[in-house]
Amino acid sequence: MNIARAAALPAAIAISLAAAACGSGTPGGTAATPSLPSHAVLVSKVKAALRDAKSVHVSGTVRQGGRLLGLDLSLTRDGGISGQISVNGAGLNVLSTGGSTYIKVTKTFAKYQNIPASACVLICGKWFKPTPAESQQMIGDISMTKLFAQMTSSTKFQYGGTATVDGQPAWVLHSSDGSTAYVAAQGNPYPLKIVGPHNSGQVSFTQWNAATIPGPPPASQVVDLSQLQG
Image (cartoon, rainbow, N blue to C red; front, side):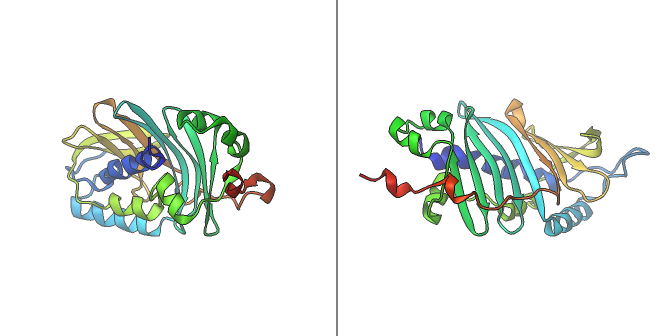
């Protein structure tokens, strides 16, 4: 299996599901939840909220093609990434900070990818610094900018009432494909959770403007890939 497909798919799925954030609906509400704005107003508010957002944490799992794809990532506006992506429970850690990207392969992921034990002894549990091309091949194009660009698509949704997501009032938006989005009904209309159709999985969005990215790992924890050559 190509690592790029294994690792980048969770983020791609999150991006496609996140389009629910600007669905259309029928106005309504409760005393605790404001009435749903018109489609045009909601789209405008979502765009403004996402344009000004500085960071977010994205987590969830999605089943696709017989694989369980997962992500647990903090993303920042300046391109920072920190967290884990996984396939069938086999994960690798990703850290993009200060303009550089670092990857940490777990023993489980090495086994899943048939990485030789001799190589795992050197790299598993330590960070290595891939080139930009290698990073693109391994983890794809994961970024807050790409995520937000898809959140402002013109996907049409129908209003499905209100709900509470982690204590926050939310509008429920249903799509004809069976997916459901929960969008914050108070404050900035950020997406809170998106559930895929046919029990295919769900993605949650938390720590809006509060997610942070650590600095580079210590040099002692970064392995030189040239040692694998020969």
